[in-house]
Image (cartoon, rainbow, N blue to C red; front, side):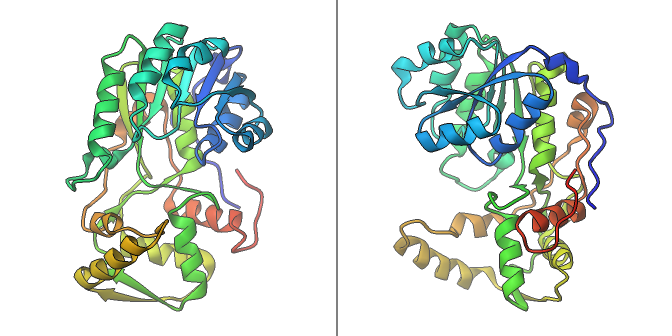
Length: 315
């Protein structure tokens, strides 16, 4: 059994009782954890949905459906006003340039409290395409009239919908050998989607979170080698790890990326393996009562949810 994490400081669930919260990005992987938690804490949730499939997804999670599209900037303020919400939780990507329109619409519609999910990817030293867009988005939020909070997660994992550890588990199930480009010595600090959702919802309920940005990650940084070894143990697999130089792998992936319509692996992802992605979470712990599960527990839960190992009662 994977035990639930117990927060160091437990936010009062009643603080969201009666709140009406507009969620943007609710049909995505993180939204699938945030909406049920908001409902559980007593909030009335309205979720923006661009498509019929998205509408069905958020409705199944317990949210009232509000049809709208972030690309339709002219209509966004009236759509937000239609929600009759007092708070906004934005869990869609900030990497597509929607922040100015979203902030403006929220201000006009009177959604004074807002939580935005960004990413620790803004700290990369690589020339990532979306970095400047995300930095500009955070600046737009921070200089707005909203009572804002920014949550910056690391790599998110936790089930079939994640594009990170679920894929790693799938590879480890099939192969007795796993290549570690660059040796796998750089640090990672993945965050379980459940723990991230707790931080998002807690930040909405805690006044001390207003006007602050929080890095939200796992409890400790681990080398990629240890991450792979821990994932293999969760599957009950013995996998041989082989270190390989990064340069030839980059060339192969570059060729693949250039030819694939929707590449599942990009050169930028390999380049980020050369960066340490370790972050101080002490402020999230202190202010939000954040208490993430160990990677060992989280990856075991992920393997269960993916159907790779027998499941047990979830937290």
